[in-house]
Length: 129
Image (tube, rainbow, N blue to C red; front, side, top):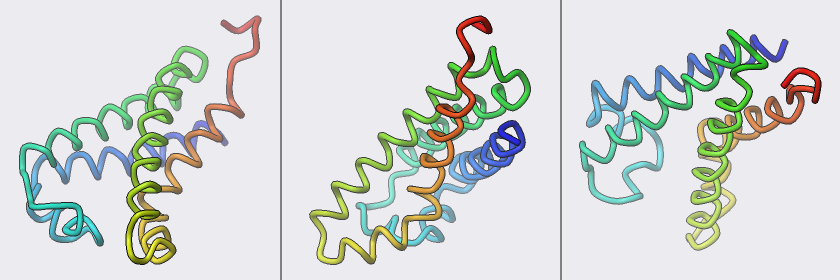
């Protein structure tokens, strides 16, 4: 089951990253709350798109070869959790923190929660490393 969850998350992260690379303005305009973070910068959107493709690669590697791909899964979880932490701080300093967290939950908070859970639940046993 861990591998299927990782594969699904990887596909979602890849789709997001590809959208950011191919259609940065459309991505910026369509994701709720993004326009509140500052002016559109296509280079920055594409940079983050590459980060999401890297996350997708880590999830895919784990889905394909769990023991060998586990460190890549940890890297993916780390980026997603640090990204979510930035959103926590930003939301806490904003005028409506709960509304922002609820708005961002599916795309910002749920993926790192699932990826972090996968990394902990599927960590290799000492004899597997």
